[in-house]
Image 1 (spheres, one colour):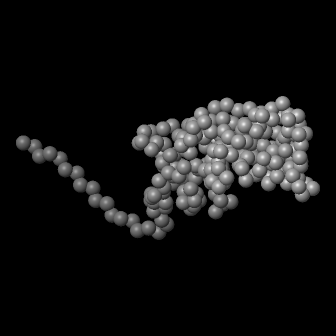
Image 2: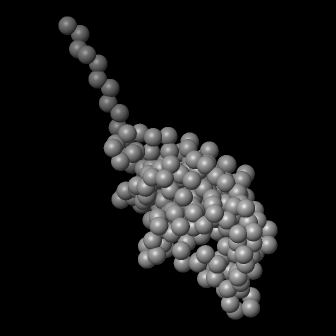
Image 3: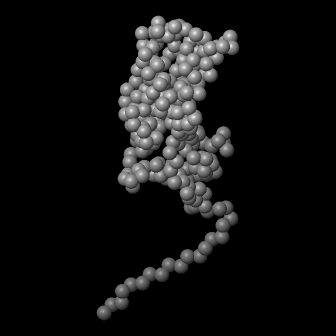
Length: 239
């Protein structure tokens, strides 16, 4: 159905992929008329424009501004950095660490508050494995060795064992160690994957009835019977 949808619909689905639910996506792809799709899109944003305390929020405006910034900074939304930026906004602060031959390129993001996780003072660590491509979110399951040049997630190197280097040759090694310890404490060893998934996943609004639009139409099917209409005009009686 996606391939057969109009270009405007496909573009919308691509842009909202991190926040749209399966029910909403399936419903939109089943709609056949532009006025139905327009109505669906309006309802889609309205469902997300009410805060938990019932206040209206400019969700669409905020999302679209972030989306434009994500595309400019990261190229697309299907990266760890892009998705987290899109869902939680820009970090309060960010720092790049570039110690060639010791660490893969690293970025440390700091959030004063991530409301969706109900967490304050959140530190996130991203690294560019092999020094090319998109940055990925570091979790304790990757192991500290994954940050070392020559190693990959899990702490292994091309030779099958973790590559050992003297990290103290990096002037910022203490900052890296502190960031790793803080992130590991926030994530936890067991809950690391869950927190990583939560960071990449949007909160789900109440979508009950989202598919009701499939039963609503103003179209008249071909061959429909013509119903007789009788007009009656009544005038006030003269006194």
